[in-house]
Length: 384
Ligand code: COS
Image (tube, rainbow, N blue to C red; front, side, top):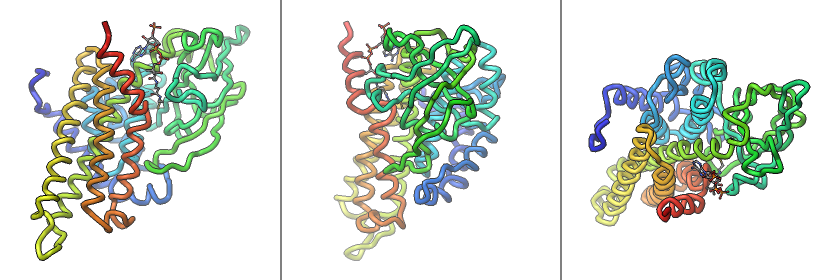
């Protein structure tokens, strides 16, 4: 793609239409219930797989639907407009197949990618632990090789793992050489149902309630050595690179929810009559809408630029962190103003704004906090 060409290809336009229609027909009608009941929308995830959305960025030979990061941004942001939990589920699901595509050997790709794409199984990325959040290198879960059986024996606990309780295939970060710290970290593929792997606490969250967030427990969990992803000791780099890509996905969630909140606000200000006329006539309201629209357009441009860099195979660590930081702060700003515009109605659960306001907050926290992103950006900007 020519760098200055902002138009979508015919395939991308079709994908956008497909994702939008799916969001309107399948996601929006259940978004409130998914939030209220804290229920994972399993049926909808299966339907996403049926229409190829869970295989975005994965070549067709492995059951995927092709495309790359920009396609992910298109689909995830369309979902974010209507149901942020579903946008989050899709965006985070895609991390595991992407990591297997990038670091897996042919056998691993053949075995796992079709399951994670058209097969309809959910993927999960298990890095975080109770004492390894922002300090991702502090992981303590071990995977010690048993030379007699050629298996890794996993012991430890992961927490806050999005989709971990529902996933069929998980990429788990462990220490294969604990003495080496983050240089002894490796990535291992673990399948649901492996003996010694169990699900612990399911979290009750402020927002994105439909995206199940779980504790994962490994107790003498034996995994064949062939499930090592990439090389031993390269796990931290795999995690960091996977997060670079994943953060563009969070950026896409954030612009989606912002655009959704703007759409609702525009509709509301034209319908809401106060002082004898639609509140859209009030300049104060117009200024709110102008700020929301301008900042969101800028956020989308930065997210799409980061996606372009990743798709072009260029370095994108800095832009991925920048786009996620900017889009997530904007999502909080926009959902807050949208709720304010809706006044008392916005505060009530009859309108989606209070859910969107709660949902938006996570984008400033997961897959790296805003503060961590500033660390990453500053390091990149100040590189000599
Ligand atoms: N891509 C490739 N390699 C990377 C990288 C990246 N984006 N970021 C770091 N690395 C490499 C470094 O180059 C270094 O390699 P060498 O030892 O060969 O030089 C190695 O990884 C260690 O990097 P660093 O010294 O920067 O590690 P730190 O412990 O200082 O951690 C941060 C760096 C803070 C950036 C990292 O811990 C991080 O991203 N934390 C947030 C984690 C997060 O997002 N958690 C959310 C949970 S997942 S939902």
